[in-house]
Picture 1 (cartoon, one colour):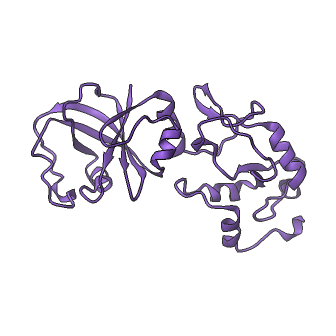
Picture 2 (cartoon, one colour):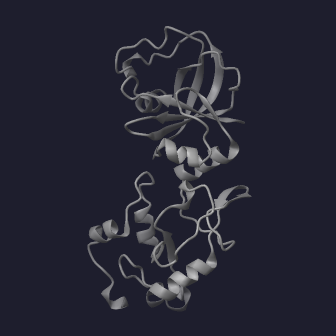
Picture 3 (cartoon, one colour):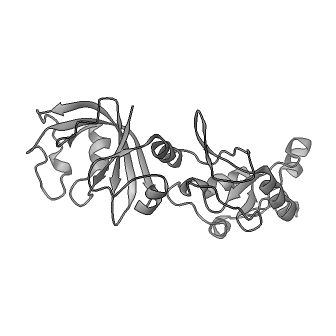
Length: 251
C-alpha cells in the first residue's frame, strides 16, 4: 500500500462536507498510473488554511461513469463530472490537522502540493502520528526526536532529560498543582507526565532539549487538555487561564 497527498481548494469544492455526507467521492485521476486500489490519499487544503483535512482510501480507479452526484458541494458551480477518468475515494477519517508546507517538507515531503504527490513511508507514518494521539512517551536515548522503527514510527524521549526536569520542578502539576502521591499515596509516588512545549513530531530530526525551558511536569488531565485539539496545542499559560481551581493543598 502506498500513500499520496492531493490538494483541495475549499473556495471551489467543500471536500470535507462531501465526504462526510456521501462517504465515497469521485476525484479526478488525470493520467496517473501509480495510484492503485487500496492506496491512501490525504487531502490537503493549501493557503490560507494549510491543513490536512481528510484521509481517504482508493476503492476504484479508471472510473469513466461519474455516478455520484456531488454537485451541491461545488462552491463555484463547476461541473467536476465534465472530464474523467476519476478515482473513487472512500472516507477513512477526518484529520483536520493544521500543518504548513514547511512542516510537511520537514517531515520529508518533496516539492509543493499543486497536484497528486507520493509520500514515502516515513512521511505518511509521521502524518498518521500527528493525526492521532501523540502523547505517549518512549524513553530510549540521550538525543531526542530521532525516528525509530518500532512497528510504527515513534520518537525517542530521554529519561535523563525527564529527571533533570523533575529535579528542578518537582512532581506537582505545573498547571493546576495536582500531586499524584498526595492523592494516591504510594501508588502515586514520583508519578507525573512530562510535556514537551514544542512537539517533537514536527521536527523530523534529532534536537537538543533544555530540560528546564523545554519540558514541564503535568498531571494527566492537564496534559490531555493541552493536546485536546491536536491542530492547536495550547501553551501552559493558556491552560492555566482556563483552570477554575487549583490544588493549593499540594504545595
